[in-house]
Length: 415
Ligand SMILES: NC(=O)C1=CN([C@@H]2O[C@H](COP(=O)(O)OP(=O)(O)OC[C@H]3O[C@@H](n4cnc5c(N)ncnc54)[C@H](O)[C@@H]3O)[C@@H](O)[C@H]2O)C=CC1
Image 1 (cartoon, rainbow, N blue to C red):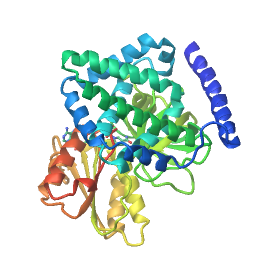
Image 2 (image 1 turned 90 degrees about the horizontal axis):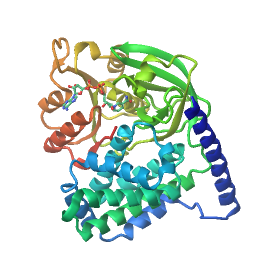
Image 3 (image 1 turned 90 degrees about the vertical axis):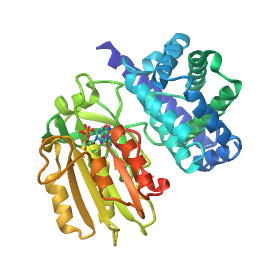
Image 4 (image 1 turned 135 degrees about the vertical axis):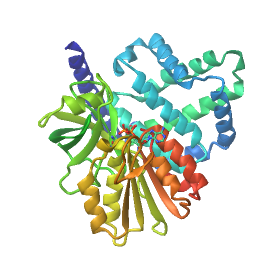
């Protein structure tokens, strides 16, 4: 039981550090805050070789496969060279590695799109404040990253790869630390009390919490959550409603195995317990233009942010024609029946289709939600929002691009 206390001490020190930085920035000392979005966009604009860097980084991935193993090696190097940083991470860093992998893939895949990549890393920088990550930590991490890439690639590593990765990493760390600096006046996380905990299916819980302070977010975004029962194991869960005046937040959680945060949230947490919520993140928010139809697709608990988007659409004066596809593996895993049926009955612009992948499906459609959406044919003229298991989302994004949807109109977040 010493570990959580040590970490609480660390968080108190961190709180003091944040207040010191905030006071200094309010007095005009230190680095100015300014508009981080503008500064980050300028940073990317001043990087004319980013398209060739993107190609170099993509090429280099093939010589460091499996990429997940290379990223695991990054942590080995980091903890070897900077053992004092080990306490910032949970005992098992597998989930951390998976989140790093998703961020790296987003960086490489979207380096040509400042509108996507800049806000993504700004949000990541703000969210990292909860972990006690500070600007000084970026250098050892970058050194470890480069050493891991070079070691794993061996003789196939090229200096052009090295330079591309260094420039990209420099860009990322500037964006993240600028955003963290700009967010100093906000807390790195808020505490929230569980006010409702309901078993909604096998291994599935619907949890409502009341944050102690306002928790700003946009429909479609997710919170990174920690429970005192499993310190330092932060995981992402989407808010299931658009923000409301009652400042309550709902999450849908499926237990995915003993010892994980999802298991704790489903099987241990009860009404009255406290959780920590780091600032909301996510790019799967409603697109501004109303000229197109909307396709919402959810797999399993991926329904949460899709339901929030639906709630947001329902607030519009004249919502666009919207089709919601919800897929579960088995009949018993279909949930939110009454709510979605009541929406479908109330809103003439909405159609809800459910799909069951395995076993009896009647009265729903049979097949994975990917197959059921694909069977409908062309989806040209639609904005698509996809949420669920990574395999589902990737498969569907690929198919929709072949079914007439402009790839820029397909939105999803890595989970
Ligand atoms: N809890 C939350 O707030 C959110 C969760 N998610 C993610 O959603 C997922 C939900 O997991 P479960 O509820 O266990 O869903 P699940 O694994 O039971 O799958 C739900 C649906 O996706 C289809 N599917 C799954 N893998 C597929 C693949 N490789 N190709 C095509 N179709 C596939 C299934 O056939 C089914 O229709 C998790 O990966 C979670 O990270 C995403 C956003 C928010």
